[in-house]
Structures are given as structure tokens and as C-alpha cells.
Image (cartoon, rainbow, N blue to C red; front, side):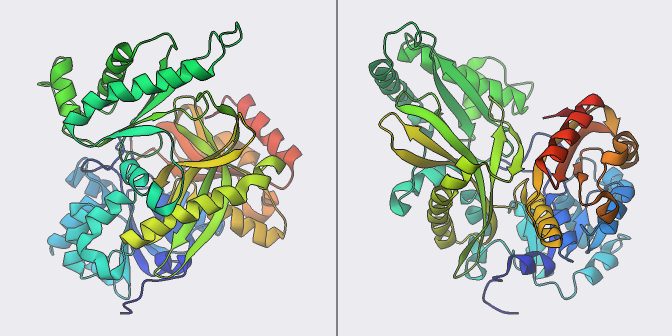
Length: 491
């Protein structure tokens, strides 16, 4: 096996056994047990191998038929879910590898023959055990730093580490504060007080500005898709003490949302102690409400691939988020103004990637970057999140690139969630969409491509991750209208 890390992004997946991450040990994971198929679809698209968490077989068949899945997969199946209730695919894989009598044991061992490495969204203790049992390296960690795999994976998804690297690698992050130990809580008052003073100094005392508020973001260190992120609005006449208490309450609210507390964690003091036990937490000023911000020009997601000796930009898309910071999707092509500023965003991201590369991270990564116009007319790019893993929009970009190559023209595309009026599996999804479902050549490369279902077995869910693609702006907008007419909400 070559000691040098795979350089080609396609080879990372084509030669890897992909295990999709669902939920697991803090600080990683999502509060929902459904999981997703991002890694699986990438592996399948490139001819790799994947262990999958009981997807709808009709869904997999559809992806294969339309050229979005060319790989070799093992469905752990409903029986395995019942055997390991609540387990993630990697937890199931470990138990199967440890049990030579399990019906899937030999099949998985055979499938792993000729594989160069493992790929997990996050590296956990379970990931490391699988690597040790199989003797395979983790493809998203430098070959020479496998012993530090878990820490490298943590850093590559850490908002705190992103902030720590900013000065060394010359990129800008939001004005903010990291709580890395309980005593840092006392310093928040000073931080908020300074923000309030700057806010009052810059915002004119005019009727138009009277309603203007300062906004903070309170973020857990390594949660995805906007989970663990809550905004806090502060009136400019507030004092630092009331703002501080508001932050404490929001920290508790996030913990309640993510079900961090047990029945024994009662009362604000007890809950705060529990939250402080899983530090770090980041508090940042909202970029749009800072008094010296004139306007937001663009909100980008930039994706790249990091190898041993190179960093390659894959693509840049416009990112859509809700007012509460939840990820809503990505859109292409960029507007004319966004296109003018993409280079600035990509240069910022390359600096960030350099720091992660030197820390030992390899493979797919994505960064959330805002380009702002300041009051003095200057333009600046600020990165507020780095995801050291395949992103939610990575399969979307693959699909868009595939279609653009086949058509030899740009296409209009949106990566988003569709929420149906009722729970759906693939067949119900297909029936409801009718002619709006993408069907390869027959649909002239236009339609809705399902990317991930939350439904699992008999447990159905109304939310489906999709890519919406069209050859013209007119057809793109018409599809969005048709979806709305069917009672389907685009999140």
C-alpha cells in the first residue's frame, strides 16, 4: 500500500469502504437518529463500496438507473437494525466484524478485499476500532498521523480550532469568544459589554435605527447542519448582565433541544454544569448586525479536496440559511455579483485549508464564508465554519458536474429539503412528483433528484433531501412553482 495519501478526490471514494455516520459520542453527531446517505451516494457514484443503513431498495435502484450510483453496497437491513437498535452504521459494522458467526461477516470481509482505506464522516472511537480490526487506514487522515486520527477529525470540525488558527494562517473569523473551560464564562460579560459599547457608538440615534438590534450566535463546537446553533438578539439599551443571563438561558435551550439532559438534570444551575462539561462553546457577533457592516454581498459554501501536497477547489455555491442559522441548501449558478466575489471567498478558504492540511486532515472539506461590504466601502471575506468531511451539498455538486459535462452547458440547480404533507418512502415520493421526478435522458436532464430519505423501514418521515436541476432559469422557477402547487414545502 502506498504511504502517500490519495491525491485524486475520486480515488478517495473509489478505493474506500465508506461507513456513513449517524449519531454517536459528543462532540460529534446529530440529534436525529435517521442519518443520511451523503457518503454512500458519493461512493456509489464513483464506483466505491459502502455499508448502508437500510435505505429503500427502490431508491438505490433509481440512483443506479440514472447513473448516480455505480458502486458495491451492503445493506445492513431491517434485521440488523432490530439486532442493534439505535446503532449507527459504523457501530453495526464493528459488531459484525467482531462476530464471525454473523450472517454478514464473510460478505463484508470479502467486500473489503482490495480496499485501500476507510472513510467515516467523523472519526470516533468506533472508527478506530474498525480500522484496527481491518488493518485499514482512515482515508481522511494523513497516513503518517493515523495515531492522532480522532483529535485531527475533531479539529477539522471544530469552530474553536478554526478561530485559533486564524492569525497564523491570515484569515478572518467573526468577532467572538470561545469558552474552553468553565472559568471563561466570567469573561463573557466583558465581551458583551464591549460589543454593546461599540454598537451604541456606531448606530446613530435616529428613528430609523431605533429598532436595530445586536445579534449574537451561540454555537456548540462541532454539530452539523445548524444543530447546536441558536441566535440571541440584544436590545442596544441592554446591559452586559442581562445579556449574559440571556446567553446562559440560550445555552440551556440548546441543551434541551438536543436532549443533552437526563431526568436528574433539573434546575438552571444543574443544567449549566452539564453544558459546561461538554465545552468548548463559541459566542460570536452576527456579521449582518455589526454596526460597521453596510450589507452582505454573498453567503458562500466553498468545497475543496486536501491531499498531502495539494489543495484543490472543487466548486463554490451560494448557501441559503434560515434566520436561526439552519442550513437550507445550496444554489447554482452564482449571480453576477456573487461571481465577482467568489475568488475572494476561495482565497480565504485556501488559507483555512492550509492550516487543516498541516494539522493532518485529508479529503473532502467545506467552508461557510460571507463576503461583506463595510461602512467605509471596503470588502472583506469572513469564514464562520469549516467542515472536515463530505458536506451535505457534496453529492449535489457531483450531480451538477456530471450533468453539466453531459450537456456541455451550465445548469440551474438547488440542493435543499422537500417537506411533504405526509411521510414518504421512495415509491410515494415518485408517485407524488410524477413528471417532476428526474429520469435521465427522458426528462432532458431536468427534474428533482432525491439525495437522502429520512424514512427507515416502517418509520416514515415527510422530509427528503433533493437536488432540483433544470437547463433554463424559466424551467427551474416553474418546477419550484409546481412543487408548491402540490403542497410540498421547499425548506
